[in-house]
Length: 101
Image 1 (spheres, rainbow, N blue to C red):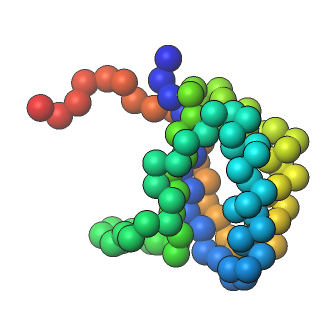
Image 2: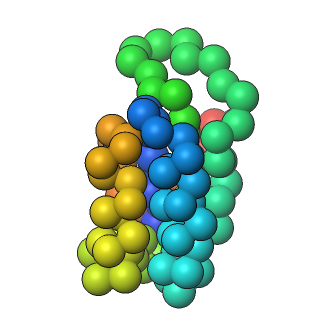
């Protein structure tokens, strides 16, 4: 079964308030087996538009990624973020097919 991912791009207007969201999201993310692959590291936007903070979060399955997003616990935590940031979030299924040689 392919893993699931959140691809997250965020512009933050209030970094102090956003820290509260980061601290609070740990519990619902852990409940669904989340693992950060990318979290606000150095980046270069080589094409298209960009936001100031990026993350890629891996889940055991696409369903777990979707269930986490829809969970009452995460929806409650998300309220800490929505007023102080603008985000693009994609929940996507991983790919297990052929790779470039």
